[in-house]
Image (cartoon, rainbow, N blue to C red; front, side):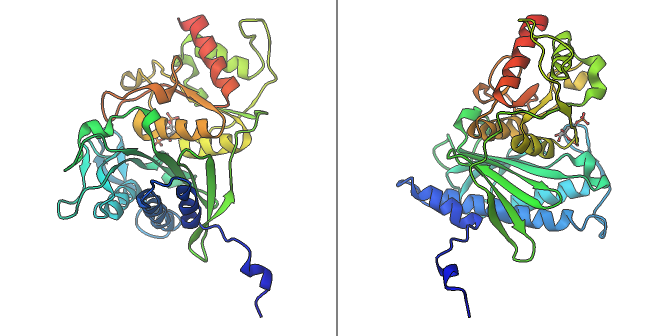
Length: 348
Ligand code: FDP
């Protein structure tokens, strides 16, 4: 016989949670709920493929390069197509853009266009795919700016402040989906048996007490003086401009931004990828403002943290091109502000 208490217990699936949140917006039509649920579905499909990575012939490179000049991995392609195909016919989107594709992606002409715009990085941290290390998907959702018909490039080049929702999936020891629609940050874990995302991390707040800094320290010699000194400050080996030292932090760097970000969101800390002089392609940093920076900045802000390009909040930057790169500092407010202070003092 069923325990009668169960009748009263709320089982918070992702669909129900998003629906409940949207109900506090009387004007909501349910379209955003459905769009976020479509993204959760895409995440489940991608997770099912990544977890079988070593078993089926999907690992390794396709032999092609994407527009960033990087080798395209088969799983990247699969994730890219999956997200597009699950969203091209729903009537919820005006246009999409993917980190893997040079141009904006129009939805199928046989279906009506919708009011939202979706930007996504289908498989972040792809250099880790072959090594069974956590990877992820990042997405951001905007309202369209164009009135009707096919969406435009302008729809995709919006300031992070205009984000309606943002989230990421991390494919790790378990699969998690973390999202915000401007009402806090909530994390769901995929129950692989039931096949449903269940609420496990409601109202995530970045802990005040910080533990980690995450940066590729192998590039140290190519950094500016400000970044070098800031990193020493985080280690407890350099004073700030007032002569104060901080207690040294632990360094953790997976090299999959989503996974590094996720750890620091839950554990407290900062992730940064500054500009460096190592590679002429990345003089303004490596990471992309619209696919990686802005969505994670929105989540961070909703969780009590902040972000910067070293001078300005990432959410205040308006991209000029689809694949614009940016230096990036993201995490606890005190650490991000301190990075800005070091940059101002030593790099001008
Ligand atoms: P990747 O090149 O493997 O896709 O988005 C780019 C990214 O990974 C981030 O996920 C990651 O944090 C960073 O680049 C790693 O770059 P480095 O190898 O230069 O540290």
